[in-house]
Image (cartoon, one colour):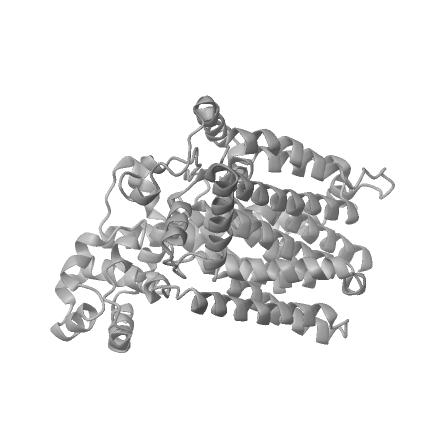
Length: 541
């Protein structure tokens, strides 16, 4: 009877809404069949969707009810939080454990491992040709450090110094996250488990010693959201702490300047924080600091771009999703496209090349063909809307196929970087050839450590620590259950987290899990915060 009550009233609405989204994503993820070389027509994909959807809907609905029941159990609270009389550890312990555990990885990767984005930014700095597609701010810091390294004897020194900065900020962020768990009364055994997870997760430890803007961006995202957790735990104490307000201020600026799309996450959080502060009549100081940081960030971003004459990012990045949907429509329904529709599409994208360019996994081949004339987008979107009405499932399939890694934990998506090897990219970065020196004695160690993380990633259960889809599901479950238990503070935080997810919808996720690092890195402490809030709600009820 108790289980039946979980399905009644308000709970059923939240369960059903979330289950609908998750079932649609799961049922629409036909790209999983690629491994078996099964190619499906759009008609067969539609049939598969109709057949699979109700199965997954019922499955997820049952999972929500089961989790709800588990969270209502007193034993769950005892396992996570104990009696409250447990001896506290030293506040510096998590920082020491993380710094010590990651130091060998930092040194082995000397001077650093990089992706092609990083090398592109070094090249832009040395040529004086900046682009807002990358971060002007990040490019300047890295370029200046490389120059400084040259002054002291070798560019490698500068790259290593930048790698150390990434390492230090990450230690500070994740070390603080464990400190917050102690403040929430989480058992020390659970705190140690979180520390171990940070050390074993290939998408955390595997990126120590790697210079990639997403890692530093994520570390500041973690710091910012930890500020939000601290704020929700004790708003007035946070408002009176100059250090914590300064951390929030600095984090906001770095998030915005390192990745422009981070501004959407910050703005969404600011709106929610303003509503909360006024509704509960709390101190407005954190809100004012956040708004000041947003203004400073926007001014700095625009000023840096203008001063260095940075090339504007293409609008094609923001239009990845509709462009991909149009390409799929042309591929499967080209015989239905009228001459007028064809002309409107061709003014924006070369119509005759779309069917061949379309890759369900990634939008780059299509969006890279954007002609660049924004005045033609109006007629194009009229056609886009008309074709959506004719074949909506084609648009749905284009979206799910490209983002199916959000819904499929069993799909592998490991990407790690080994070295700073310019020559590996051929002539792409010819101007940088010979700039950085390779440390031959470390080559074998670098390859070994990367292979070890790849092996860890394949261990059952542990492999999910670095799995984008696993943490996306956790976020979904946590948000819905917080709505059911009316854990309002977590709900506000969760809505901000979903803005992280919405930012990556459209760009490719496969082989680029770094876009979802903000969710992966901080979700353990976020979920424990949610459980603490639910526990408090049950105690006060």
